[in-house]
Length: 392
Image (tube, rainbow, N blue to C red; front, side, top):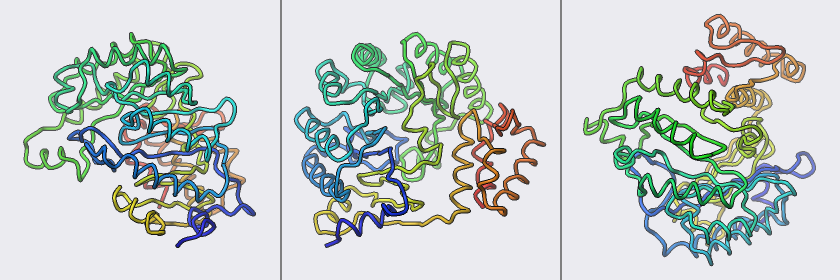
């Protein structure tokens, strides 16, 4: 049997040297079905495992030894909202005990439109959840069908309206560059979202991930991706359309009304530590990154037999920590206060990053405003290709 202390050390927390994280992520690995683009760690149509999973999660959380207060808590998946009310009450009670939310904290839940009903919303709100992220993806019926979503545009509209009537903050995920999608379809999605009264939007270009069914269908030319120029047009349309309607573009893929940015995700982008629990959950504690087993059944088997669910562990050097903090920080539109950071950064890392910044400013991908280094509009488009240069 592993001891509580051993798992805390595996996670990287030593209370003599580091402060505990103030953010936590919990992965709920269940869905009604798996969409063709999805390669997340989840099991479809396995209601029979719900209670067993909650027991396993309780075992993992007990390794904290004592309640650890957090300022943000995020329930992701999978589809956390799939749990029936009695089991949702059990889950939330478990989390309220081990990860009590500080006063004024943010507690988010990802939800499928079909799970968003008045009774569910009031239950979640009464038990402490104050922010909901709706996995809607589109308001277009043909696009929803192509993405294999299980809701209609009308059902998404009703879910948004119900959520807005109960929750403090309501966010919506939208996907662009779906197969056969045109810029007009995407623009209509943006306009529809704006008129829905949401205060946060996350927009993601469809990616073809190995392990997802769309990956194989693309390789066999069953589906054809949108070309790069069209995808770029859609991304820039999101920036321009949402910005002109009062949304702040505060991170590469995220837009928010004033004071409605997702506080939990900002902990990642600041390079803060965070707890994480559940299959495939990746945490960053005390300069150590560790990842749980991706398979739900193996995750449960390990916990049930007294073995750690952690399968990967990497202790980052100080150099690596600073490089990652820079890269995560640059995902935010306000950028990184590089000038004020420099006195804290190891000399070799400082020189390396300065050299890359100079190159990328020359290319027009970054610029300096006051003491911050930020991505330009041109840089936003190519940003994913830049980060490896800073991490090497």
